[in-house]
Image 1: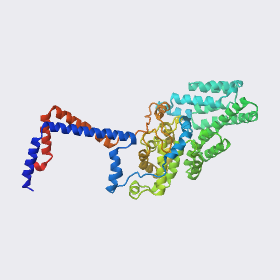
Image 2: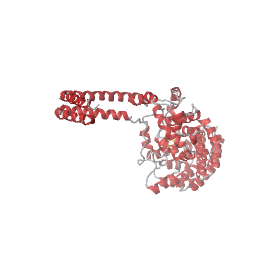
Image 3: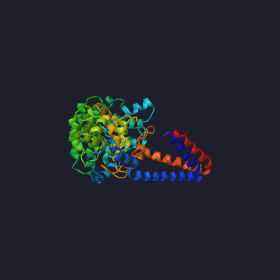
Image 4: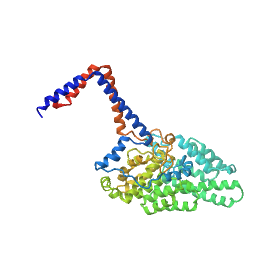
Length: 496
């Protein structure tokens, strides 16, 4: 070997000395061109399939040959047909802003936040939507017959909170049984939940009396039908808020009973999503069998989905396996049937609303939820996590299972994102709507966004580096030849 070293050194020196600057120019240009073509191909493949070709080949073909296993095995049961069957039924109903079923009380909760932080938790757009809701639900064409209701019509349109409160008191002076006035005072003047509950109890007493009168007048004409509808809305709203007061004050069983009675008494008002209030209260009681019974009724393919429905279903599935789940063990032996079911449920939930996991895993700060939410948007994720994070923390290992599996969902979601998988396509305008609903100090979550894989960055860097070398070699051929020979000699210590 020692005798051959001088020969190898001599032949290498002769070879390098015979290379001309044109060779180095051609070499760097060729390498730059090849890396550029690879970058273009990788970009095209990523835009079409949502993954890097080199990474996919290494994970799918090379890794198994080397004895590795995929950390995110494919989950059975994900068929595009399910998403296609729901698309037509849900696209129209879902692509709109919904009233938050668990919205807080303005005076007792939102205002207290403003007093402490000096920040406004509600946007003007959100409060304007609430004003429109109040005018729609709490007014009707026959209000001109009642002076107190005329005053309340103006109160709902007032922008200044003090003006609204003043108008509510004026309505009570005209009619001491004006339920809508008590509702406004409970929402905005009461500074504690206890005070709000007192106002709502007065509203309930007045609302029930008016509702009974409207029931007797119902068959007469269309105006009385509109009046009955309004009085029904007031009564349902008051009973729901009373149940929420009981929930916030720790009387959870009482709250559950009130919600069940309300759903039984008014079964046609399912669009108000009272079942989401019930789910949250049952989770607080840890009555998981009752939660499953509610899900069995409302998690139906023909009914609109929500983050509360999808993530609660995932939580129950995760509860069965999360306490003993280990990512390392699962990657070695594969997933059990129960674990596959849990992972599938998490993937389903994440595809419906991909913003939620970062809040549940506390990778992003929570804020007070808005009064309205956009389904599948950041506003819905904030509202869900605000009330349900404690339920995930209570179940041992549930957040760990979510952490280990949720990112794998994005590799399974069809790309481009205009396609749907289990659900209809993710709307591209959710970010715009969420920015209207959420306060300016909140960093709105924008998704879906597939980050560029490492190999995309590597190829781009390689292309840029080789292009720079080609340019320098073309401009300074003699210096680059000397540099290349020096690098070649230094990189071969045996030839030095």
